[in-house]
Length: 214
Image (cartoon, rainbow, N blue to C red; front, side, top):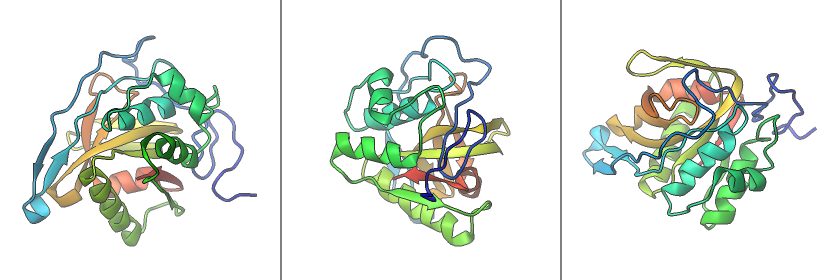
């Protein structure tokens, strides 16, 4: 069996497999209005900060997190596609989007081939995996490419708000601050917040046993 992709049901998931996406309680049937985050940067060592300008759009149903997160990443690179079009390219069904390999494939098809898939195979991210994620996020964001992450589980953001996706989810990493110690997340299942900050180790552990496109 390919270790990256395993078959799964809607809420039982394997390595890098979405299996399904849960909507937050505030998500309505239609996508939320687009809202961009201003692009900013400060290159002062560990205090460096950068946030990419995106066109945020919430996912319209429980299984479109992959298309929504990928579309957000594409919007920062001047690609205006609908979630339906992205879903077709990804092979998304009601079981979700198959894997981070698919988000990488579609991002490369549409943006010139600079994305790559990275796995965090361990149940808890090792320090070297956390540092690799930092390097990958900083390099991608500095190049104008948001990162699409396949995550699972529960974490708490920098403001103390919990975010729980036990059945699997895709979201977009669109910025960083403090030299990458804190990551800006655009979450298509949470239009009430849209974007929020999460510490780097928490993001890495959210991705654990799955992968990301950077």
